[in-house]
Length: 250
Ligand SMILES: [Zn+2]
Image (cartoon, rainbow, N blue to C red; front, side, top):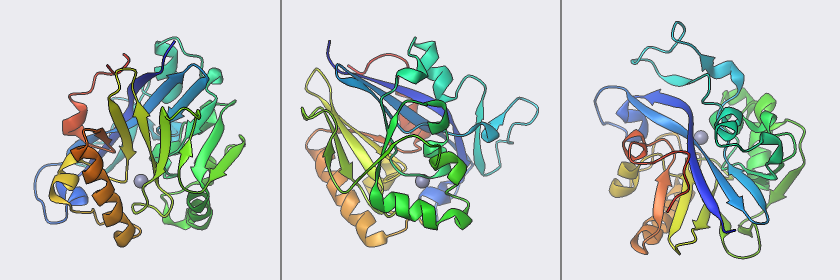
């Protein structure tokens, strides 16, 4: 058995183009709220877990297409996505939270046996930042064991899943560099870069906690991309249209 990487969309984030790149005009965009399963011979890890049940909507209560916000529909939550490919949520050993914003750790509560891996500076930011509305203790403080790390971490000790710091969007944001059986590398970037267009233009969004760190992260991403790494961006609807969910990446 070798490593397998699966992608799921666990909801939608709606915003105007100017949220990603200040000054850009246009209709509201609908970006995914991704989660990734890394199924490794030594254990199962989920990278980000989507939203808590309070963001669930149905056809009658759905956000209009021209409203800013987050939502998901029944069946999109991470536990349902796992069950749909016959993976028991209780079998997840690790949760790698890119950061602790509400749309990245809201499914943690449904993964009872996982150890949560987060940068210690992110945990501190979440604990201090609850009044901002972006961090909620009911999402990030769900009682499982937390492994707080500082900087890089090789999850399985074989170089196949390397957690790397990508600070900027938040003080302790992290991403995961996954080596596929083919040798190809994929970076699960999450919100250190919302869309491919941000990286193409080297423009940080306004929602950046530390702009200097954010630009260093963009430089790092640009180097990785030049070296052939496929980057999966945080909320990029255009890119997501080309992602096949539920089957291992080739
Ligand atoms: Zn975020």
